Length: 202
Image 1 (cartoon, one colour):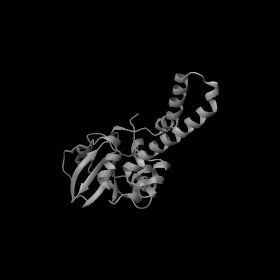
Image 2 (tube, one colour; image 1 turned 60 degrees about the vertical axis):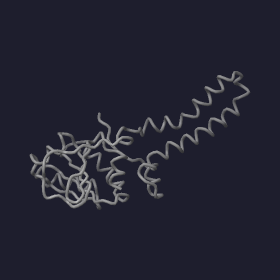
Image 3 (tube, one colour; image 1 turned 90 degrees about the vertical axis):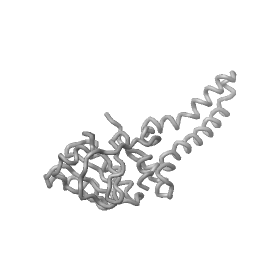
Image 4 (spheres, one colour; image 1 turned 135 degrees about the vertical axis):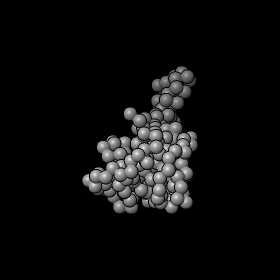
């Protein structure tokens, strides 16, 4: 299963405090390392009389120190798209385009496309650019379904001109398009869209 980008409550908390997307992503890890250090120091102080060998004390300290970090990382890992710019320049031409927006190309029945709406809904207040979903096809029920998922603040449009849009996606859904001055600047697939991409939008 391909990873998909999502922000948890911890990261959203830091966003609400005014931090950037990058800081909101990585501050929890630093915070948990800080907690782990003092937890390990406290536990070692309690158990030191029972652990006579220095190397065992060191092993205990290090393993306890990194536990909160590893636990958090297990549930909310760091992906390549959070560290490296992994966009591509899509082929194909389509018009008209909005002047400036983050466009998500979604396919009806695509589970990853549906999952992306959770993240877009939560981070929309922290983006300076407009967010639009292009739902492929001409079925109004699919459009209504996506509009319900994203709620207010995100616009959804039906796009029946599938043959024009498919080349932009390279067959991967959802695909994220950065549009500036009425032109597609960059695009990301679902498994490459992350913090680096959001920093481009901010």
